[in-house]
Image 1: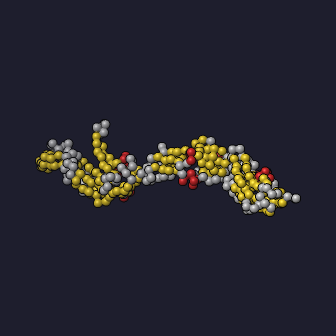
Image 2: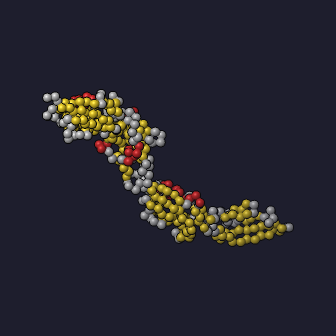
Length: 353
């Protein structure tokens, strides 16, 4: 086409532009009068025609390869709506399209549209409950008629978030010993709600009085010294859900010492109280112990030589009590136990007549 061609747009200049003799439609229009003038010799050749600028129609809607699945929590409407708005491509790319997504299970994901307070038309996709559904993209024309449906779908997995948590503990207090690893036990007494919450993991922190317990970077909780500490469990999924527990750390006895491995008693015809001898012969280490875990006292001959009537330990007063009697002649072994056992021999002899 000659470079000196002249276009006569007449009433078409709003709808059509020309650049390098290439005509481009700008706006919809019909009955547009477009002329072409070509100077030739001493004359100008002129031709006119009627032109219509039509809308480009979409021919396909494709799902992007990196948007074929998504996981969201219930209530994350904005996140799901944004993901779906970016999940498709229209063919051709310059074709305008009104796209709406349809869920296979609308009890899981629901479509809503409305006018907001700023008189803006809003379309959104609400994840309502935990579950999985597929969503299909549909293209509608301006009259609301369905024009195209995607052959691919997007898989949407809706997860249940944590709403609350509690700690199932006696009076919200737990007791342990120095050296105990508390990680598994404390995690086991955390109750997360609702039951179908997706991420039930918690993060522990020291709320106050933190010397007795340490928490490592990887979440290991260990009792390191006697004392009281307040620990807090916080949901990783929902930082607003938390609960506290008090942990009392004891320094337990770890060793048994006898002043003598053997004590003697003199038996006549009546039982002889040997409580003080037994008690005075027993000691525990370390000297600053605060508890006697698994403390028991027993006799191997309770019916004919030595019987143990009672034993106890008061952690507040640190008072040890053992009630023992020699009831016959012979040798008996008294077993004293904490984490392990040690043995004390009692030699009950008959009194001289």
